[in-house]
Image (cartoon, rainbow, N blue to C red):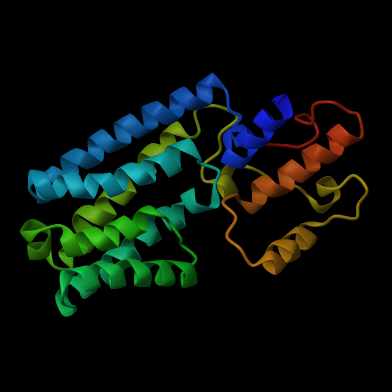
Length: 240
């Protein structure tokens, strides 16, 4: 019975999140401050009803930037480029496609395609594209100005708050590529057989989106090697 319970939890993904209290509190505080700032910016440019829709997209982004700051979908280019390109797609569909249900559907589908090719896949971008279509008169009146104000302004504000809160403790580093040192080839595998290029080749062959940065993946492999060799904690061997 216990094993079945563990299997169920694993299947549901419950056992995939292991973080300390400090991580959780910082994530919550960062999201609170980020949303408060973006909400006021949105209210300045559009009415309350439209701002409520816009902030829903920002809220989804806050979960990524503060809840999983090391994830590939949370990095600066996805967090800004995803909104930028999706907003352009959404406004274009709203202007040129009828009826609304078709414009919204095309906007989300095309936004996903564009983000994929631009390597800035960011889930809230889908909402940004859809809101441009269904957001109402206030948003429609903005036209392509919607792309910069409030979409990009909100994205940049949230990014700035993320840069502050995600570097308050040693366990966090944001953006991942700026602060965390990539493991050197000799550090990735104690045996010397697993090199960074091997990891990249394996990821490319899998042909799937992995929400983990290359830097973190290399560090995980290096840490696992040290634990497997019986050296205990690998923090002193693998620089963060």
